[in-house]
Length: 117
Image (cartoon, rainbow, N blue to C red; front, side, top):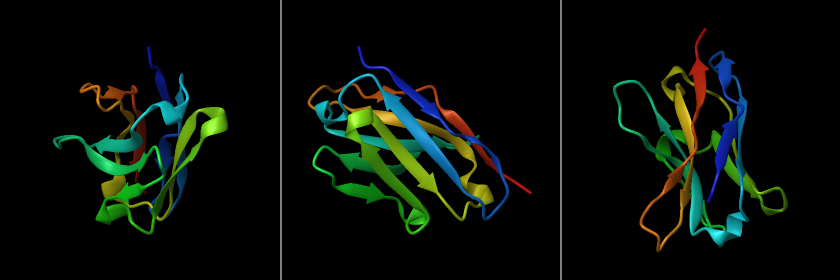
């Protein structure tokens, strides 16, 4: 089975940076897409950024120009580089695997990102 482990979260001041990592138990090219989602208290989990098997990237408008998703297939990892962090970026960040045509997505346990002065 597929196993995902996120790391890199923490506490950072507004304007700071954090780098998140997701280690995957399988070759990342085995999946249709992988991505990062986040969920803040009282809100639904939503997309941050995703990258498809062929390298197409999608980011939500609120993080464009600040966050960068990337991958390293040799290490079976995807990353989320976050800069110019804002308090509204505070959330639990989850790594996601889209296994299309398998209808069931997979999630890691999440890593907490807190942006506060």
